[in-house]
Image (cartoon, rainbow, N blue to C red; front, side):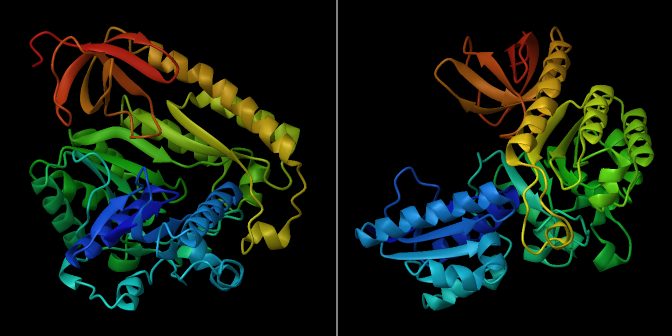
Length: 435
């Protein structure tokens, strides 16, 4: 056990990661050494930032807490604290069932951890972070919470109402990060599209993106987690006009059949969904769309699944993920519907949809062969440099593998010609004169 060392373990999404990075900055300001997701947990203090979105995420969080509880009993760590979404959602239950944890904190009161340790919280450092990503990119959280009422989703239960940060605060953070060498921003929120509605009385995502885009050295700006209903269409103009706004949009659609969209309380119809996607592609030529779909929501029929499969074939999403419905306490679906589809059927439907997408992904990548793209280098491995195009977000999208026939610098951009393509990877070489 290392005295004055804090190990912080983050489970779940990039929005949780931002919270962990802010907590790390406070610990460092208080004289601690802070490590994130260490290979060997040996800190005097360990903090687990939990996820509670669906069943698998909850199980992962509980499993991690139990493992660390055992490490505490063996004397490998001294103090164990838990924060985040799962703790916010099941605070009292976790207190009773996990006595090995010294204290629990929710999604928003983690600042109390410092006070309980007898340490100050430095308000002037509130927006500063210790980046856990490679130093050339960072996640930029522009709001917290969600006002949507989707039947299956527990996020509003954990995060509360949508709360936008001010544009000035976000701009200051971007300037600070660019001074540290950040060249790429993954803009994230539970719901990007409602940004500004609570603070300014209107949806201001287009104006925010323009203002971030104007900051010197802001580099690539990539947008994650938009919502299709009440989509701010002026954003399409911004994406088309601003060179540093990536032609990439992550827009979670979940389903397409009208019966399922109604049951899911998605506030949009099949026809409206098709019309929106067609408009996005028409107004922003070359855009890559990432979406997330769900199988197995209560009431889903084989006809609904076939409609979803036809949708995937027709829209040919460049990027797509999917997950099986999880019956979550506190949601509308939990109290109004029976979880009537067996887990194995949910999984079969999920696999069916993803098999269709795998073929589409391979064809999309095949079309990139022979073309030249700007690529940012993320890391160096034994046989390749590994980078991404503007159409690829870290950890979830395809990577570009570049032979090590010349020296490249991690965090720099290079023009790369794609030579070979697979469903989930591209292979390329730096263009002559590109260095």
